[in-house]
Amino acid sequence: MTNSELTIHAILEAQRNYFLQGHTQPLSVRKTILRKLKQLLRDNEERIAEAVYSDFGKSYFEVMQNELGLVYAEITQLLKKLNKWSAPQRPFTALVNLPGKSRVYPLPYGNVLVIAPWNYPVQLALIPVISALAAGNTVILKPSELTSETSALLATLMNSAFPRELLYVKEGGVEETGDLLSLRFDKIFFTGSTAVGKIVMKAAAAHLTPVTLELGGKNPVIVMPDCDLKMTAKRLVWGKFHNGGQACVSPDHLYVHEDIADRLVEEMQKNIKKMYNGDAENCEALPSIVNDQHFDRIVGLIDQRKVVTGGKSNREKLFIEPTVMTGVQPDDPVMQEEVFGPLMPVLTYDDPDALLEKLKREPSPLALYIFTRNRRLATKIQQGFRSGGGMVNDTVVHFVNNTTPFGGMGESGMGNYHGKAGFECFSHRKTVMTKPTWFELWVKYPPYTKSKLKIIRAFLR
Ligand code: NAD
Image (cartoon, rainbow, N blue to C red; front, side):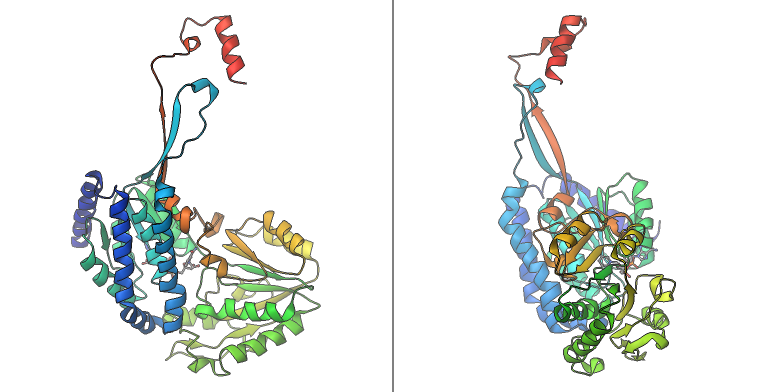
C-alpha cells in the first residue's frame, strides 16, 4: 500500500464508523449540513470564481450562472423536499399477504465515492455530493486534477468546514483515483469519459459496488426544413460555444436538411459575430481550452478547407475561435470522437428516415436535439430514440432542469441524478413487510393437497 492509499483507507474507515454509528441518519443533521455548505459557498463566491477563471478563463457571470447557481438551486430544492422524499412510502399490499402492511424506506447506501471531471469543476463535483449527503451518506469527493486551482480550493474549504468522517475532498489524478477505486465503497458516482467509466465500473465490480456513470459521447442535432431558422441558429450557437464547447451535453454535430443548410450557416455566422462582439479571442463569454493536450487534439480536428467561420487558434492563450465547418463527411476525423471544443461540424441530409435509421444504430448519445415546428413528429422521434435525454428546439438547458432526472444510456452512461432522481440515486429502496400474528394463511403449509392448491390458484391469478 502507498502512503496515500493508507491515509485514504483510514479516512474511509472513519467514514464507515461514522455512518454505522448513525450520525448521518437524522434529517435535521442532513439539512444543517446542506445549509452550512450553501453558506460556505456563498461566503467564498469570489475565491471560487477566481479559481475557475484561473483554471480555464471561465467568466464570473458563468460561474454564478451554471456552476454555483445550479448548486444553490439544488440545495434549496433538497431542503424543501427532503422530508417528503425520505418519508416511508405506503404501497398497497398484495392480497396474498393481507393483513400484512408494506412500507418502503429510502436507506442511505453508506460510504459514497464521487469522482468528478474538470469541465464544470464546481457543479459536477458538488451536485452529486449534495444529493449523497441529503440521502444520509458520507462522501469522499475526488475532483479533477485538470482544474487544479478549483479542486484545491474545494479541498481547502470543505475539509476545514466539515469533519472528514462525513465529507472529505481528496485531490489527485489517475494514481489517487486508482487508490480510491481499490477500496470498498457502498456506491460510486462517476462523471467523465466513457473510457474511464469502463475502468471505474471494472474496479467497482470487484466489490459489487453499484455505480452511476455520467459519461460523454457525440450528441447529434437534427435540423428540419420547417424549423424557425433564426431561433435555431441562435440557440445552436449559444449551445455549442457555451463553456467553449466543453460540455457533455454540447451539440456535437449538426445534420441540417440540404434545403436550408446555407441559410442556417449564414445565420449562425451572424450570431457568432454578435455574441462574441466580433472578437472572440478577447470576449469573456468564451473560456479557454483546458490544457495543451486538449488544445492540440481539437486543433487537429479542424479541416481548414471546410472552415466557413473561425478556424484560428492561439496556443499560448489556449484559445480556439468558434468554428463552423461545412461539407463534413461521416468519415472525417471530427466525426470519429467527441468534439468537446468550439467546433461545429455541419453535415447535410435529404431523407430524414434514412438519417434516423443510421443514428439509431450508433452508440446511444447523452442527448438528441431536434429543431422543427412539427412538435408531434419531434416527440414521436424522441420517444423512439435511445439517448440519455433530448430537447426539441433547444440544446443543453435540459441539464439545468432539477425537476427531471438527468443521465445517460448505453455508451453515455447509466443511472440518473438531479433533484429527486439524485436523492434516489444515493438511496436503496428497502421494503419491509409487517404481519400480525392473529391470522395465518394455512394453505401454504404442507402437507400439500388439491384443495389448498385450488385456493392458492384463486389468490395468485
Ligand atoms: P476523464 O474521464 O478524463 O476524467 C474524469 C475523472 O476521472 C477525473 O477526476 C480524473 O482524475 C479521473 N481519471 C482520469 N483517468 C483515469 C484513469 N485512468 N483511472 C482512474 N481515474 C481516472 O474526463 P474529463 O476529461 O475530466 O471530462 C470530460 C469527459 O466527461 C467528456 O467525455 C464529457 O462528455 C464527460 N462528461 C460527462 C458528463 C455527464 O453528465 N454525462 C458531464 C461532464 C463531462
